[in-house]
Length: 109
Image (cartoon, rainbow, N blue to C red; front, side, top):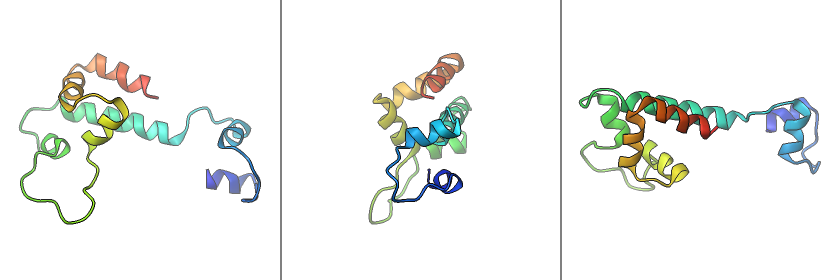
């Protein structure tokens, strides 16, 4: 939004909503929505791989050892739980069915 405001030469003191700026530019889909949809698409691809895939093990967070001190990093599964409010096993089960996962990921856009 900051870049778009600069391109339109809108001063930072102007009280403009994000919606009005997007309407002026003619942008119908936000960049964050596109990134989230691609994130869901890639997550579905990883979940459909074989069981011993390294990417699948890492994304599910089943690695051994301790986390470092401080805030725990947000995992992919945590992001999905926050957006969908389902349990992780339900999300993984849904991702194994390609057509159902495509409907889910496109609905989130």
